[in-house]
Structures are given as structure tokens and as C-alpha cells.
Image 1 (cartoon, rainbow, N blue to C red):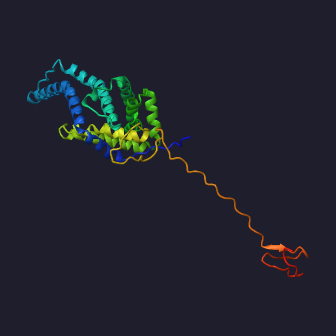
Image 2: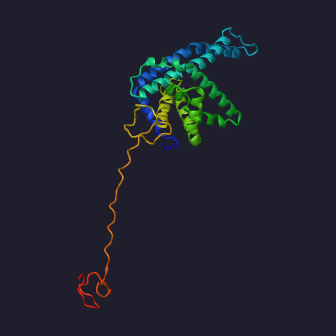
Image 3: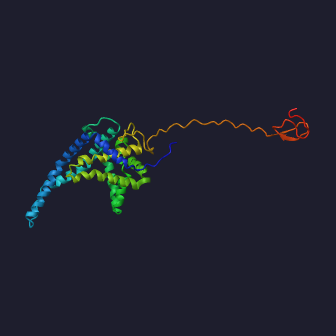
Length: 293
């Protein structure tokens, strides 16, 4: 029976995730540009209307601003796109990451390949948001813990096609023993992914894909991916996983020790008089009879 070993966080996952992105950065950047263009369709007009209202307030502070009739529909459209589009494109990003991890050729079109898990990803989004909301009500910090212990929920749905409940439970079981480190790791990865927004949001085309490449690397080491590659030049797995099938070296052949030879006695008994004498003697020290006669 395979021994269960608790997964632990390896900060090298971040560097390897970066190398994974750098290997096919052209595909990742174009995918991000496509997603950005799609989200910009409702977002740009919405912010232009909001900016117009602010300018009206600045120029005529005594008059209420004029609300555009398109403001509310655009706001609703942005919210709907964030849920539906986010789930759809997250599925595509993860599909791309796992294809690259297995050494398959990735293309920009992989962004649209997550349709079969789309509904389950939406359900996972809602479940994680619900647990995070409960955590936020408990002094906010537990919300970050939710992000840590449920970090692998989406990869499990997308790569192993698990149900929502099964993925939530499996991610929790894998991370609960080291929940603090996985919480810190998930926070750091999300922070790295969002750093690009400080470069006028343009930098997101480089930083945001790291959220998926790093997660794929971590998933590989915790759960195992058939045919997965290493992006560090090392082919040796760092530690066995709880959930991935392991191949261990065969046990060494049993060692058979030769039976110990019984020690020869150091004394003899004279057959003539019964006197005990040393084995090396040739004659009895009492009667003088030759030994062995």
C-alpha cells in the first residue's frame, strides 16, 4: 500500500512557472490581448460615461449630473461578463497551461477550448466566492485561507474533470495539513499576477498568465500529470505526491547469510582414563595414552 505523504509548498514553483510562460510567451500574450479586447467592449464606454458625470460635477457643482440611459445596462453587462467570461476564459487558460505542461503544442485557439467544463467552473466560482464571503465575515483573514485551501479546485475540475464538490473536497484534503503555507502561496501568486496593473494595465499581458502557469506546476507536483515536463532542466521529481500514482525502485534482493559454522571444541576427554585435556595435546597428561588411540 502506498504511503501517504503530505504535500508542501515549494517556492521554486514560481520560478518554474515563469520559465513556462517565457517558453511560449507569444501565445500567452496574444491570448491576454484577446481577453482584454473582449472585456474592453463594455468597460470602456462605462468608464467614459462615469468620467463624463464627474466632469459635469466638477464644472457645475450645484447641478446634479445627467445619467446616461446606457449606464445601468453597461454596468449589468460588465458584471455578467465578469462571471461568464471569467469562467470561460479561465477554463481556456488552464487548458493551455496543461497542454504545455504535457509537452503538446499550444495555440491561441486553446483560449476557447474550455467549453465542456464551463458550467462546473461557474459553479466553482460561486462556491469559492460563498466560502470567501463567509471567511470575510469572520475578521477577513479566513477569506485568504479559503483561497489557499481551495487553490486547486479549478485545476482539478479542468484537468481531471471532477465534479464541483469532489474538486472542493480534494483540494481541501491536499492542502489542509499545510494550510498556512498554501494560503501564503496563493496570496503571493495572486499578487504577482496583478502587478501588471501598475503599468497602466498593459503589464497584465505578462503577469496575469503566471496565475495559470504557476498553478499548473504546483498541481503537477501535488497531484501528478501524466507526461508532465519539467521547466528547470531537471527530470527528477522532488517528492512523491499523495494523489499521483508513484513508481518506486524495486526493493533490493534479499540477502541470505551463510549459516555460521559451529566452533570446534577446545578440549578432549581421554578415552583411557577420562581425563579432560586440551585438543592440541597428543598424549594424555595423566595416563600417558596417545590421544585418538
